Amino acid sequence: MNDDLGHHLLFDCYGCRGPVLSDLAAVRDLLKLAARAFGLTVIAEEFHQYQPQGVSGVLILAESHLAVHTWPERGFSAVDLYTCGTRPDVARLARHLETALGAERVETRQIGRGSLVVPVS
Amino acid sequence: MNDDLGHHLLFDCYGCRGPVLSDLAAVRDLLKLAARAFGLTVIAEEFHQYQPQGVSGVLILAESHLAVHTWPERGFSAVDLYTCGTRPDVARLARHLETALGAERVETRQIGRGSLVVPVS
Image (cartoon, chains in turn green, red):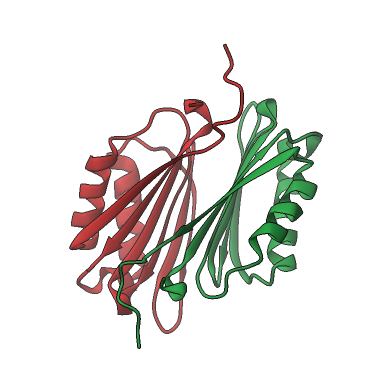
């Protein structure tokens, strides 16, 4: 595994309750708080409120990106973190998102990226 | 499968040649051209040039997001498209990226997101 070329972590967050998924400012705050809590360095951000509902947001990180898409009407949020270098504690990040989104269940997948590049010795 | 909640398509692009991976403007142009070629609607964009090299960029789409991260020194680019609704022709998109990035090989993965949400009947 080429740790320097990235791990892509996918979090499917089900049963999200409350108004947070509909509120751009709340979604932005929770994504930035998650980045800070896991030592990720935010370089730039872009968020969008869909009509009639739903929010998309992306943080460009020193480590790559952290993105979220919400479907308030389905209680569903999809988060993905592309991180090169040190991989965060994935189970702890899943619990963090579960709490922040008021989710009943978070399904996590970890995908190695760039694994066919020959490592630098 | 809940087609409306998203497909996440990952493209690991190996053996990328030429200066494009180091050039923010070139990376932005190729990502926006790819979006246009596949009928994706760009809502917002954010790009960043790393030092000493490498570019990250994200387009927020009506359909969710299209992101790229480049490692010019390794000839590697990682692209991911999160799309809800209609899924583009994945093999054709892989070939498009291969040409645009001057890649020798593109490894493609398709991941369903939100598959545990009960479909709306």
